Image (cartoon, rainbow, N blue to C red; front, side, top):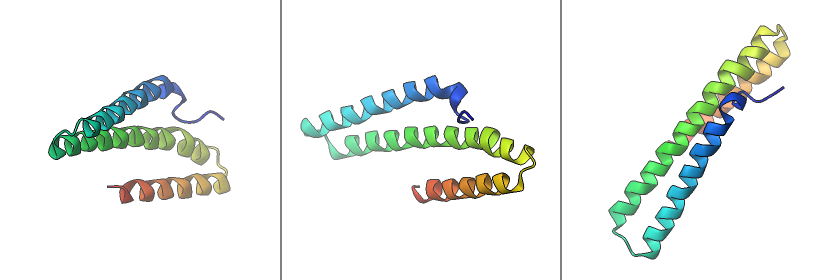
Amino acid sequence: MKPGYSESKDALIKRLHRIEGQVRGIERMVEDDRYCIDILTQIGAVKTALEQVGVKLLEDHVTHCVADAISSGDERAAGEKTSELLGAVQRFVKTR
């Protein structure tokens, strides 16, 4: 079974590459002794961008993986995917 994000994989990779560039930019800011608040602002932007990627992955997991498990009629698979989802949401919320 393909992951739920398969259809948006290229967009996710493109977004992650942009985030990677943002992180390299922060590194350059530190190397250049830039103002603390400017660096913190950029760190906040990276955190927001990563959270947006996480939200997209959660959405795809719910609409594909969890929905498929529930619609299959397999109660064990549905329970596993539901537990997985709840664990992911709890980890995601803890990072905020």
